[in-house]
Length: 248
Image 1 (cartoon, rainbow, N blue to C red):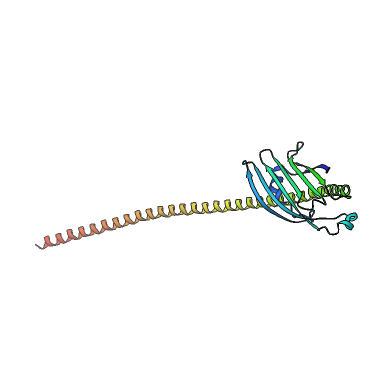
Image 2: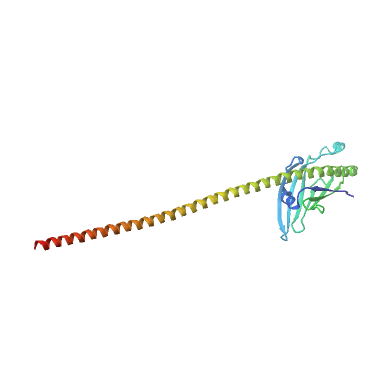
């Protein structure tokens, strides 16, 4: 029979924040044993559930008491992680199990992230583990070792994920603030351009008004000059006519 263990951990972040960062858990300073991660499949189920399948590679520590019998065991172990992010029920469920080495130890881990009932701004992670071994003579010791390692890794995993959540959302907040600053700068520039255009339009209107006034004044002057010239011509004609009349 497999050994079983469960525990709960709280992340001081909302479920939405956890959902945004769930695939960015590695790397972090608390997970040096995680060597690689690769997403091999992802699909949307029923429009509300994001299913992902990933392969991880972790170090495979052998207990000191088992080095004599397990010295040939590889120091790296591949794992498959399947996850379901359900935006309708606001739950994230991950299943992680070792691939190969079933004779030595088979470990299955399940984590369910839900909104914390006491604080909706926090997220509760229910972590469960089942450990089995088919290695005759060492089964009980190996299963106990697997559970104890899971307990220690649970604490590291929580601390590591909290570290990632803090960094992830600090970066998002910084980008959001930067965006707001840039938007404000753009708005100021837009207002300046709009003000400049308005000033130019008003200037053009004023210039057009001055040109109209100038045209009116010029027209008056031209008209006045033409009237004076016509008057002078008329007077000259009259004078000539008077002169000719006297001579006769």
